[in-house]
Image 1 (cartoon, rainbow, N blue to C red):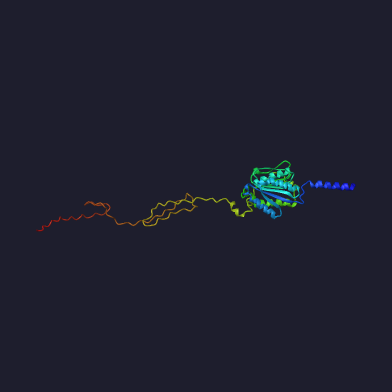
Image 2 (cartoon, rainbow, N blue to C red; image 1 turned 120 degrees about the vertical axis):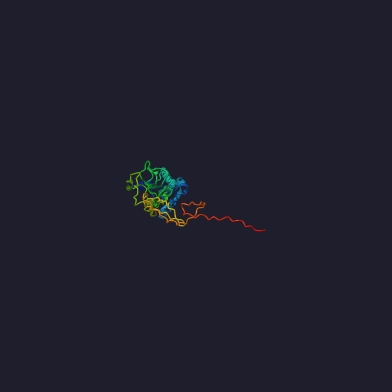
Length: 318
């Protein structure tokens, strides 16, 4: 009888020891992804959902307005042993939603293994039921901070130095997708619930990411390498020198010479071309009559005009 009592005590102790914590051996990991405003600008969350499902991780994509109903469902599934660990990812308003959903699950005593916001609109405090927060952001006022009772790992990844990433395309960045997939696979493969000893060594709450070197910028986008160079400085073309020489009659006007752009403004003017002299036409007598005995200074003396005797009328007989 004593032996039977001892066995019952051992069994009850084992149930209390292992049944009260998050046991995910018979459940599957579930990644909840949330889109932002109007489900229009966060299509990268749908792409990331497909990429995770192709790698054998169960992932679903939702509108950010559904987070509370999904939190109720996730809490029920977790307590029933159907799913876990729980992973939350969102963009913009969806990033705000995952932080609110994590806090809501904490009120229901449901642990969250990983939360990854993509450029949320504000800063949130990480609750104590979250094991790891990886926050991708491009604005310093959206850094996540440690809340009361938080004992996990929190990393703010600032991507503001990358000119290829903005609020409307941060959810589609291949580099950030690769980081997110690796984080999810690490959690799903090991059913990680609490931070490991190595992760607890990451004490800085807000690590400063050094700016990338010039040779390392846009390593994943070789088509934009030309933007590394500053635009060439263009100088105004030199003005053509005026050509005052009048072209000869009957000849085409000579084209003015222009100085090359390398010639300084103070250089001497190129000599103008001299057109050949026009042929001299024969002298033309002046229109006004010349008085007798007067000579024009421009022409040789002319002989006096011949005077004719008056003609007498003829007498014709009748």
